[in-house]
Amino acid sequence: MEFLTVKEASILWNISERRIINLLLANRIPGAFKKGRRWNIPKDTRKPMDKRTKFSKQEIEKKVIVIAGINSEIGKELTKILLEKGYFIIGFYQNNSAIDKELVHENIQLIAIDYFNRESLLEAVRSIKMDLFGFVFMEIYFELEDALTFDYDKFENSYKVNVFAANIFVRELVKRMNFESSIVIVSSIEAYRGSFGASAYASAQAAKVNLVQTFANIYTEMYGIRINSLVAGWIGGVMESDDSFHKAKEQIPMKRLGFPEEIADDIYLLLTRHKYMNGSSLVSDGGYLSFDEQSKTEDLDSGKFYRILDKFFAETASGSHMWIISTMMENEWNEDPAERKFIQSNFDAVNRGVKMDRIFVFSKKNISYYKKNKYIQRYLASSKIVTKFVDLDELKEKYPQLIKIIKQGWIGIDDYALLVDLPSDGTSRGYVTMNKQEISKAKKCFEELEKLAIPLKEVIK
Image (cartoon, rainbow, N blue to C red; front, side, top):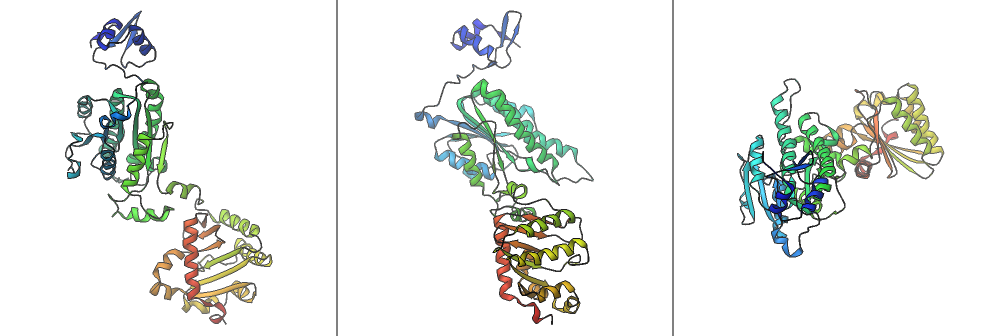
């Protein structure tokens, strides 16, 4: 490799030797090193951009943004936004991928690359001669895995695309950026969750989030750029036919998948706004992560669940309303001490002034069995607890949508909390949620059941 002296670089770049020394001391000339008293500057190193340099408002049509993964659904939506704002776009795409017609535009330069080949990536970035306003990395490689016949090649390919390519692009493209430039790396909530069937993808997303923090440490001082991560949740439009996406809706407080244009809008804001945000991650997931970690406990074993039940029943104030669905599971209301204590807490609550409505949901053909249950008889004898009945078989036939909500039953407390039973065939007994969406859904179900219910004493005499 050929090197320049400080004097030679000064002449070539048309800046003072003193300025070059300052750049060297600030570690802003990549590849330069000092040997003895002499600085050696790689001959092919590009002149560092002045961190004080800003794009003028009049130059907005000259602002260039590179998008890796331009032909993704989010990439196409981001492209629409940027074109409307007058940006010029350089788009990278996998060389064997089809390109949408809407990406053929006079202000878009498309570059086909092989994400699995390092030299192809380097060749693509070397071909860019313009100064850059921003870079967005949103290319992904996702493959479901089989734990029994694990494919190590697919695992490595995931890192080549998701991590190695992002690393190369940032380290090379940042050399063409200035004080107003911004980088956004798109990641996934699996960075925080892990995955049952895609360990390579999930761990690669976590690596990208960490890379963003590392790059902020290195390049903000060196080039004056900002770099952040957009952590996206379950987004429709690409894999929405996958059953897991439909199941995910139940875990999202907003009760829907995200739209590609919503994520694209978040990326645009990270690129052009949020000027003091750096090395950070913006989560855009409809509340998915918050739902599980803040609004719902983990699934609790019997001991923990009963302790929480006792606490809620003991602390629920006079005038509150408990609305309860009892499905009479196999382990419900037996002679277990914890069950007996729980039942007594029901009566203690109503004697304290808590209003309690309980709807029993079981098959009418099993009524003779439940007539013998002493605890049901005790509820019937109480004048302070409203007990009603709905036939399970009728629900299955006419209202299957309500069965999906009822599941194993639950205890609602005002609009504040929902204590949910889990099937008795596992180690978990239930969980507690304070998620407003889930509580509202259960309460509407309870109100629908009330329309179908009859007094329990009419069927158990």
